[in-house]
Structures are given as structure tokens and as C-alpha cells.
Image 1 (cartoon, rainbow, N blue to C red):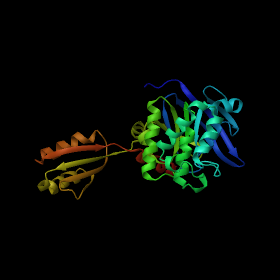
Image 2: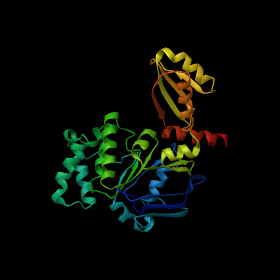
Image 3: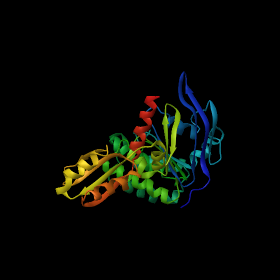
Image 4: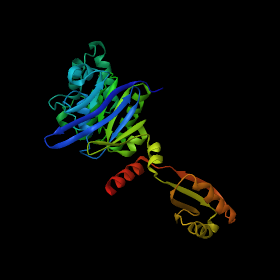
Length: 315
């Protein structure tokens, strides 16, 4: 599915809390049908951005548009078309999960004729069907987060704003939640995913926007960012084990950062670029060393993230 016109547009957005600058003029967009990851440490401005998109805060400068609407003027219309999961789910603990979902189904104008079936399906999807008639007060943190995810999908929203949606989930539940996010993307839903989970963002997102102290440090696809930042790759080479010492000597003479792994014949070369790979393999072959496999590990989002913060610290 192709990427369409921007569904979210943020331009020079500023927000302060007293003397604290939460957002210092950030700009980015999210196209319809796209998953964009909003990354950054706690306090970087992720949650503030989401609250501004929903019309829950007033910007001090800049503009925000969602579905072409101004959240301060049309916040209710935006929220009707949006599913939200926050770090703190905000669930009424006096209700059972089933009762809570029926309350929100009414608030979202989900037709009564389909409420029962849709709620049962969501409870089943999120592994809550057996505890659906227990009060939320008895739920664990992970169960509450799963219920919040079910709640945000009740009205089949066009846009999902997810603020650390898997933070309180166990590994199995987190994996399933990510699968559901990916499924919504395949259905053409638009998602802004605020997270500090780098692996999650890399797996799910079309683009990432990295915030640092209320500013956009960088945005783009992880691999494009890696290339722009000059983040090096890592090369894994498997040679004939009997030739391992010779291979290490050949590579060391080329001033490469190299070491042997416990697996027989496996060599790792750190801080490689793509252009160096043919030269390295040619040197090994010229020395008469049998080379069985070559794998270039491209930089991950974690590599990009670390490189950005190292660059920021140097400044």
C-alpha cells in the first residue's frame, strides 16, 4: 500500500511548562497509512506531542493539524476518529473489563447491534476473555495495558496514537500487541508510536523521528540515517578453521578491528563500510584462505541512536 497525503502535520510546534521547555519548535508529518516512531528518552517531548495532537494542551507557538483539523477547535471530532493508548491507561477500576468496554462503545457511538460481538472478539484477541467479568481493580499492570489496547480499537479508528503501548506487557503479550499493530498497518491505519523500545520501532515503523530535549534530532528510515551519520557496519566471515590464525594476521595487517568468535572459523570485523568488503575478501582469497560465508550486518536503530547521542555529547 502506498503512502498518501499527510494525516498529521506538525510545524514549528512549541510548548512550555513554566520555565521548562517541553517542545522547542518541532516539525514533522505522518502520512495516511504510515507508521511513524516517535523516539526519545523520558522527558524528550513524546507524550506532550500526543496531548497536543488530541487538543488536550494548547501550543505556545506553531501549528498542529490532524485530519486537516485544528485540535483546539475540533478536538472532539479528532478524538472520535482516533484510538489512544497512554502509559497510564486510566481505567475505571470499579467496572469489569466487559462493562468498561461497553461504556466506551457507547461513548464512541459503536452501534448496539455489533457491540457484544466486537467486545467479545477484542477480549479474546487480548487474552482477557476468561477474566472479562472481573473488576479491573484485580488486574495486573499487563492486563490493564491489554485492556487499554482493546479499548482503543473499539470504534475501528483511522488513526492510532500509541504512547509506550507495550511497556507494561510481558514478552508474549508484547509480541502479540506488536502483531496487532502491524495488522492495523496492513489494513491501512495510520499510527504514531511513541516508544523508547528501539527494537520495537525498527521492526514496526516506516520512519522514525528522534526527539532530544524537545527538539527533532533527526528523522528518516533507520538505514538512511545510519548512512547519513556514517554509522559503521559489522562484517562476519566464516573461513576454514585451520586457516583462522593466518586470516586474523592478514586482517590485522590491514589495521582492522577484528576478533575470532568461539564458533570455529568465524571472524568478526567491526567498524566496516560496504566499500571495504570486496577489498577484505580479496585479501583473504589472495592469501589462499578458503572463505565460506560473508555477512554484512547493517547498523540497527540502536546503533543510530547511540551515534546520535555520542555526537550530541561531543557538542
